[in-house]
Image 1 (spheres, rainbow, N blue to C red):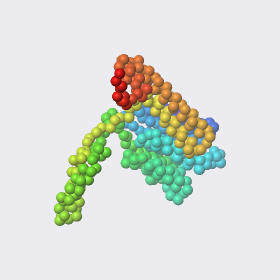
Image 2: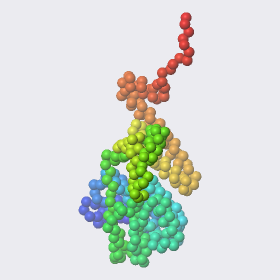
Image 3: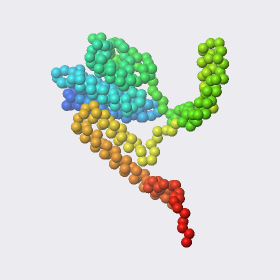
Image 4: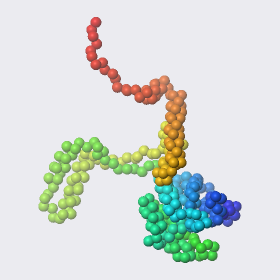
Length: 345
C-alpha cells in the first residue's frame, strides 16, 4: 500500500508526490501507482477506474505539454481472480481513451506482459493493440530479474525518448529501474503558417488549354530522361502558379467561441468516452450512461445558447439588437420583389 507521508519524506527538496491508493475491494497487497513531480508545475490528474490494473494520468497544463500515464497490472492469480482476456480488453479501452483525448501521450509502468516473448499469445494481442493506436514500446532490455521485459515505455513518437537506461540492480525490488528523458512539446500562442493554393477556383478549361500549350512547347530532343522530367515539372508548376498561386496563410485557432465553452467541450468529451465504452462492452448500463450524457450535453448547449444571446441582447445597441433578432429568427435578407405589376387605378 502507498503510504503518502513516508513517500513525501523521501521526495527530494522541491518535489511532491501524487498517487492513487489501491482500492480496498481489490486488496491492499501490491499497493497503487504514483508520480513524483517538481513542485510548482501546473498539472491535473485523472484516475482511471479499471478492475484488473491501476492507472493514473498526469497532464501538465502549461506551454510544455505532457501527458504521462502510470500503469500497474498485478499478475493474474487464483487469489485476485484477474483474467488476461479481461486485462487485454480493458487496457485497450484505456489506451484508446488516451489516444483520442490527449496529444503526446507517454504510458509507463509494469504491465506484467512478456513483450520479449514474440510468440506468447498475450504479447501478440498486446502488440496488436499498440500497433492499432500507433504506439511504440521502446524498452529493449530485460527489466525483471528473470530476464523478461515487463516494465514498458509506450509513446507515439519514439524519437521523443532519449537516454533510456535499465539499471540492473535488484537490491530493493525484483524489477529494474528504467530511466529516460522525454522531449516535451512546446505550445505557443501563435499558429503555424500553412501554404495553400485555391484549387477550387481554377478555370479548368483554361488550365487544361495552358497545360497542353506548355507541354507541346517542350523540346522533344532532351539529352536525358532526367532533364525531360525536370523541364516537364517546371512547365507544369509555372502553369499552376499562374492559375492558383501559392499563398501563405495562418489557420484559425481552436479557441472556443460564443456559447461553446470549456464546460461544453469537457461534457462532449465525456459523451464520446461513454460512447466508446458502450461500443466495446455492449453493456446495458453503459448504454444508459451514454444516453443520459447525450441528453445532458443537449440541455447544456441549450442553456449556454440562451445565456449567451441574453447577454448579447443586454449589451447590444438598438441596431445590433434588431440584427441579432433577425439572426435568431433566420430572416432572409433578400429583398422581396412583387411578382406582378401593380394595377393602375
